[in-house]
Length: 158
Image (tube, rainbow, N blue to C red):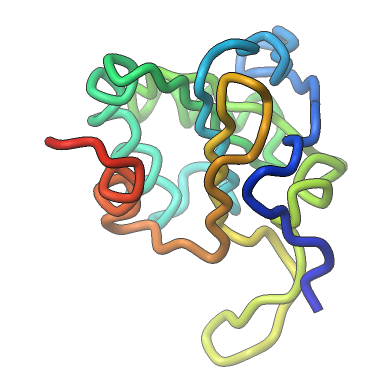
């Protein structure tokens, strides 16, 4: 059971979370802009590092296509700051330790991990359009190759 799933065309749940520097960041800060909000299980783990570095390496082309990127995890601020510094991440990392935003986006629930069913963060990405609507909800994405797949779905050329 994974709970809710957002659908394309629905309003994206609004949120305000602290970034790695302790500054509040709201989805509404990006009103009028296209925003990629991605949820990842834990900073500084292999898959999450691969995915974050993929966004880092593609940030300029995403921004030039009009997209902002926000990473969200349950990590506390010190872990996010360390992750940002160690990997040279060039986009905000937001802390959702109570999993409220995870659950509003359907990015928390049952998943299979090494053949066992566990409850945790579902690696998920949401593209929010300029009007605050979900354009593209992607659940259970793969860390490796995710940004290339996302770029293809968004019609962005390399």
